[in-house]
Amino acid sequence: MEKENVLVLDFGGQYNQLIARRVRECHVYCEVHSSDMPLDEIRKMAPKGIILTGGPNSVYDDASPHADQELFSLGIPILGICYGAQILAYQLGGKVSTAPVSEYGKTETVVDNSVSLFKSWIETSVAWMSHTDYIETVPPGFKVTGHTGNCPVAAMQDEEHGFYAVQFHPEVVHTDEGMKLFRNFVYDICGCTGNWEMSSFIDTTVGQIREKVGEGRVLLGLSGGVDSSVAAALLSKAIGKQLTCVFVDHGLLRKNEGDEVEAVFGNNGLFELDFIRVNAAGHFYEKLSGITEPEQKRKIIGAEFINVFETEAKKIGKVDFLAQGTIYPDVIESGLGKSATIKSHHNVGGLPEHVDFKEIIEPLRMLFKDEVRQVGLKLGLPEHLVYRQPFPGPGLGIRIIGEVNEEKVKIVQEADAIYREEIDRAIKDDPDWKPSQYYAALTNMRSVGVMGDGRTYDYAVALRAVITSDFMTATAAPIPWDILTRIADRIVNEVKGVNRVLYDCTSKPPATIELE
Image (cartoon, rainbow, N blue to C red; front, side, top):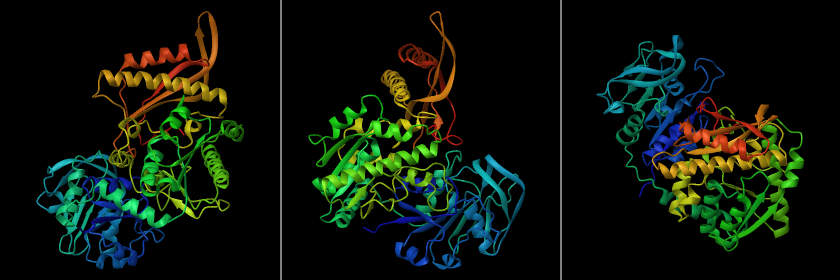
């Protein structure tokens, strides 16, 4: 069966990877590459379609990224989104200028639903706009297929040459008909059949791992979270006992999690692999002493993980590869390519020069979180493991605002355990209500309180719960007030050092899901 794929060329927009996610929802494989990807590589990839993404620049500035002009002669359908639409207009002979009125947010948009790109669309619907430039004149051969009150060219196309463009963002949930656009593009315009499934990903990836590793040995940092667990299962399926999993208990895990991880992944557990537990809490606390800046904490934790891996690798003998549970949002948010950096991830960016491994293996690097879960289920992992609460590599180090120490870790572990227990109880009572992720964090704020007849001056705990399908965007979960108050009462009464509980009701964007 022919492998279908669609190529996304990234011009620097922050949420361009959602485009790839939407294409994959159509069961068509999709990858994101830099806008300066060489034409020879594009030809070798043989995409059925190409999508040009949004970006923060103005196409008429010489320093701004542009597409290779030969891209438009490949005979491959091209869809431009936002900045990508302006690239098509500018490089094919139209005119792009500063818009008299900028548009941002939900905007009533009118489209010509007789054309293939907008098949089955409601003629007038809400689309998400975010632009200060606009297409003033369309290129020769193009016709306008959409407009708003302030944007005369909200969509355009040259069907003869296979060029399509929209000024709005169909990839975000705020565009009502957005998924229809992607289906129309990949199926009706690109001719895809939608034959990409998780089972084919597993078979292909297992084969690639075996070919790359050969007779070598692989070292994986296993946290027990969803990503590293699925990575371990996938690697175990491919190479079995050639895989050594090192579980670093850095003292920044959730309550009792170290023992739980060992029970599941130990040498008598679910996987065919070698398992090593390293108790390194004291070492990490020492390295984090006095450190308050979030990025510095992340980098310290990441560097120490690498150092521990290197030490264990020397103990067990020759190790050829370091494996990591990196997933697509990690890569995206670390700003690889042209997109802006939101936050660095400890498992992204390559190996320090002093580490003695050939290279990194990241079998999940191109998957979004929900896709990782699908792989886990396909591999036969139990549901309670696959749907475990997401947990960042730096652990509680980024759920404690300010300096990290053993006392603060104990506080947030206890508060988080209470929070998760109460939310899990509420989910059992109402299975239709379930936040995607929920956790407690420790703020660096201390405030006056009264407990019994005495005055207290203790910490405030922040509760976070979000609803999301892809972890690229999220909304705050509406936790019922009676549940919130019960949680707050328990935390204040049961956790020493806490006299106030706050709830974070911010969406992503503008906030991130984690506090740091």
